[in-house]
Amino acid sequence: MDHSTVHLPNFIIFGVQKAGTTSVYNYLKQHPEVYLSPVKETNFLEKDWPILIEQGHRYKEKKIVTFEQYKDQFKGVTNEIAIGEISPNYLFHHHTSIQLIKRYVPNTKLIAILRNPVDRAISDYLMHVREGQSKTPLKEQIQHKAHKSFVILKGYYYQQVKHYFEEFSREQVSILLYDDLRKDSQKFLQEIYKIIGVNPYFEANTSQKSQVAQVPKNEDINKLLVKKNPIRSLSATLLKPILSEEKRQQLRSFLISLNSKSKNEIDSLDEEKELLLNLYRDDILKLQDLLERDLSAWLSI
Image (cartoon, rainbow, N blue to C red):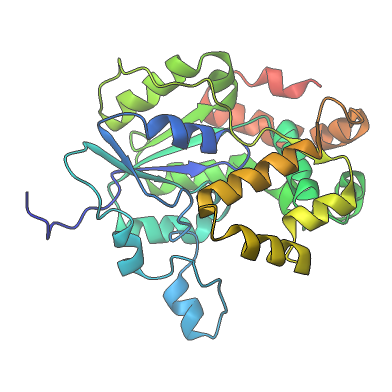
């Protein structure tokens, strides 16, 4: 094999957040004919990083911001048929992402997984609560900040999907539904296998679900576990010599889960669901026509 060959994705799962993309990443990785970037969300094609950096934009040290760093994500490819990455923000950032996909990987197959936008927004909100990133109650976001809340804005799929359909051939863009992943994960994966051209009869172990929505039982304990602080830094220093980074992350996840209650245990957020559905109803109807697919299940709480 020629090790100088440059490999780039021939498929990208480009949307949407909180629609099972972490689970799908873990399932697809099991297929012997599929190679996925070691970093699940490279986000390289989200923004034009070289220009932003030139303009003085600051970014996290580990971020993939150059084409060379992006190519490095695929240097481990051997004889896999399908080479891919999963960055669900590419749908929301469609204006920049489409241009960057055209620049770097114009012929790649594009797959989006869409979730009922009401459920998606609630799951996203609960994640922000769990990670200590949300100070504004969801009801307040809906009533007063809907036009600038990313939690809410990410659920307006119609224009985002339409833009992809307009800029690429319809054969190149596939839209799948999270409902189908929940209903029959093997059948759902088979659909992806057919799109990316690998053996459709491979059966992945789909028993493990990733990122189940939970909220903290105790906010103070949660802050100690998820935010940088002296106690967390000291714990990391003490555990470093005896536990690998992966084991330390597993321990942290276990402690977070001990301090969490599932979304079924908290207030049902029925009022918020109604308010969200009022926001999304017209968009869902437009999307239904665009996809020529029945989305009526999304129109009731």
